[in-house]
Length: 187
Image 1 (cartoon, one colour):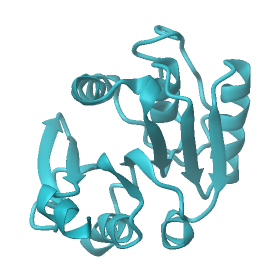
Image 2 (tube, rainbow, N blue to C red):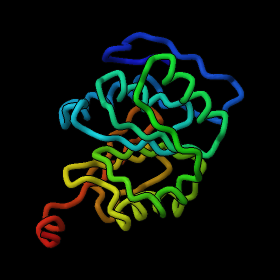
Image 3 (cartoon, one colour):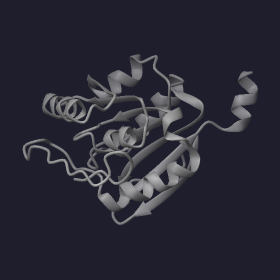
Image 4 (tube, one colour):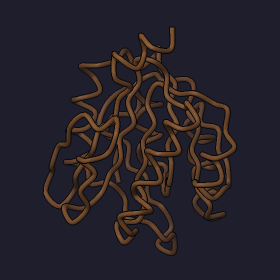
């Protein structure tokens, strides 16, 4: 696994083989960050990385200058690895060891970008629970985006707040946003 761009561009990070993870491929990660680069200044946003695994997505944000990053994973080994790596590179990544669904139900923390990379083997209902909880609990900033990574077998396009999807090999990123009409109703 390598960091694609930013301050730590090209740095290789080797997680322990025993971690129960499926990291986002470099190709998909690079494509995702090209999209985000056109939407945000990385030093002006906050990020929540759900099902963070090895921390690959968190490291990319940190390398690009994001200073408010929260990585959430229920696996102790993953959290330990993220803590060690972020300390080695002096990255501002706060970790929370928690079941992601419990975190989403109880969190009051809002973010500009919420990235979720749950296991591809999740059921359709489990995938749908992620956007439902994010929007029910108002965890996304007004100009923010929720990105859910999944396989081609999962389709989230009929969900409320769904904006669009991008496919990269066997990986799909579904983007969710707060609609403008919803914002005007709340004001």
